Image (cartoon, rainbow, N blue to C red; front, side, top):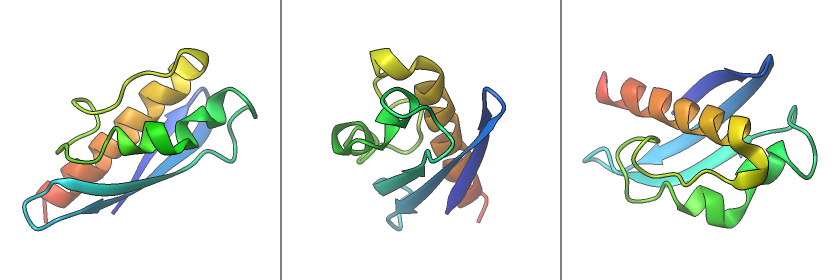
Length: 88
């Protein structure tokens, strides 16, 4: 399920996989519009793995120090995807 968020005027998209119970099993974030070396840190394996096992973005992700706005945008995009899943 895709979750979208505007991050400092740039679109940030999260593609989130859920199991039948609504638990996140995987996340891919398109941060192609983010600043290389800063905002694109939300695409690292460690950051993406922080969502796995949660039911929304807010309870899962740890903010990355060099990408605070991008981290918040990613959390909001994952949470939007979780809300879409819950509404199904």
